[in-house]
Length: 173
Length: 396
Image (tube, rainbow over all chains, first blue to last red; front, side):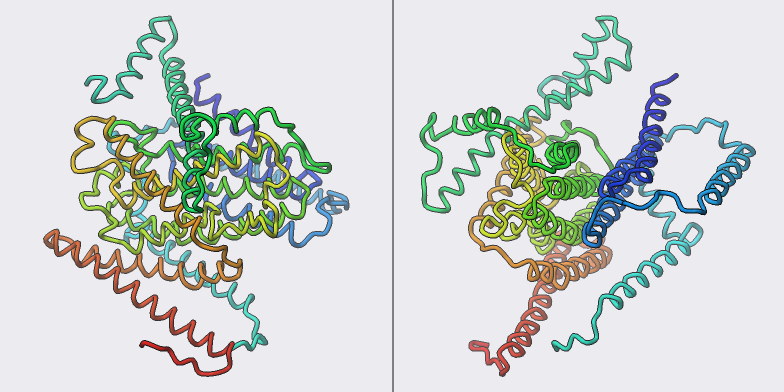
């Protein structure tokens, strides 16, 4: 086993274990903190894949913004931070079947893909992944359309947030 | 390549030779050398941190017309070591009902979020941890770990003052992160790279001259990120006693305190790197890497001193004023400045250097002037609304 494989196995185990703790722990703040650990594990996986930009963005967006927001929401909306009710509802079997089907389907699909068995070649020496990513995102032959659609979606979300938060009865002006 | 030109590589190569000479496999020796490098850097930083305690106390004493620590050693230089011993032997208390694991993890994360920043600080052309091509984003990512540590500390202490302090601090940090990231993009645009060492290398002219407004916004946002006065309402001694770290004692409190000082110093360094040429000083960095280290430390200390100057001069701002200042003034201003900088940079490309610098500088002045005029007319309308009469300004 190479060093990379050991690192991958450790990181994958920590990520999955943290993910499992997110759904099983009774304390909601602990669940949010375990979620941070799981997201951090994903960031480390990106680093092992040489995707530094994605790893850092993962930390900034998911840990720095979304996880903090979760913790805020949990603390501000719940009186008791412990979850008292049952952890399963009566549809658990349906969810289990769906999860197993998704896993089976993905496994089946990826079996037929030659990328699963091929070893990726490493970057050339002077390859700048981030400037490559930047120019592909805004070039018409690249991904400019999905990029713009995502931007419009985000702007719509921003406008929606302002609309929800805006109180028309507030007649200060 | 000698020890005077490239001390880091020479030392690493020599150590590697020693370790492999002992019969260690190549990758283990590489790992050990890297580990030792990190250990040495962190040890130097921690010793520097002890010195910063003395610097901070002496400077605040000067600002407040006192003498400061002056009993132990010359100029009170041994005082911080005595403080460290005191913190070490102090009773380590844990409040009843605290969440023990989270409570103990928070100070470590707080210190870690500052120390990992130094991985991307280029001390000299040849001395830097990693040459990340996303250095600027990395700084923001490290900051978000700091935010997490504060909310962990505030929540796990089981204390209402700690929780209120943490809420305030996190609200400030996640909102001032936006203008900070925006102004960090200005050196990125000017240098064409996000890497800290590339930004320094391409900084023929200090970016402060090309974007004085960007440097100013960055400084304000950095002070808010650090939670220092006038943005220190997380601590708010008079209302919250000490904020998120109220329940911590001994060295755990010391971690927060030392982390804060080192964080301020580090941001002084980043200010120097992004806007004042980092280790560059009229070709001095080419003479010897040790001179380059001296230059960047000097610039970082000037930035740190400026942060202290602001801290001990201004009063605390109320939280709604602070958030309004950020979201209604600083953030739009920072985004306008990015757009203007990117446009001017593209328009003035290829023009002579003096024209380029003057154009960039004047465009910054224009943006600042328009923003201040808008803010002034807004505040006049607010005053009229509050006082219910027309305010006539004198002298305009």
